[in-house]
Image (cartoon, rainbow, N blue to C red; front, side):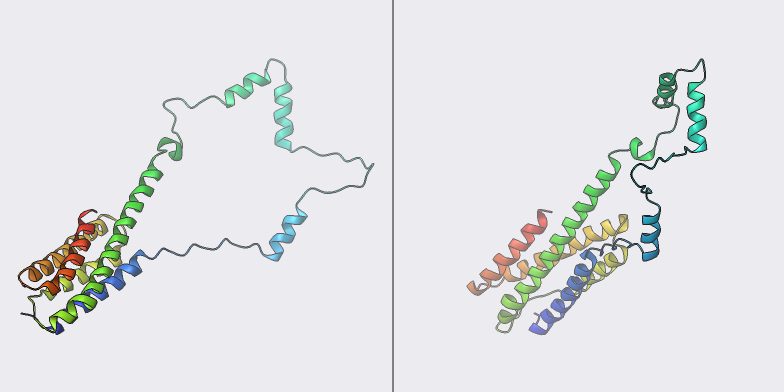
Length: 221
């Protein structure tokens, strides 16, 4: 049988895991857009179109490349519409296509996958926070009256898994650690429910109900 001190040890490791999870789920701060300096703003305003007084005739010189292209189109034997259609012809099957057009659904699949991982992490944080709250407010006062069999090693393992997750934050190893953290938290809650089940006391009914609700939310993930 474990004393309240043993439960406090478990709670301390669970709180450490909770802080690690909350730090891992915190979104990155977006970078602020780069502001134009005074010199850049001045040069941009100077590079704009020039204004002329009314009645003043101005001649806009065409670039050399554009003038040669226009002369080439006006040459005899060449139809401008045929030239334009030739430049706008679709890519053949053998020509490489831009990557963003070749895989239009790739970015969306990655986004949905990241959203699913973020949702799973948020639920894990919520379940851990709820477990610590139930242990502190409901279970700890009851242990002062009657000890229960507890397993603090599971809470230590849970904290270690969350620490590994904080170092990864992405990739297959992160997903495996996330799944392992879910399983470890389920084990902690399941063992607490089993320990409370052997105690013939109505005072433990609210604790068991709260723990079952947390476990049910985890199983739904």
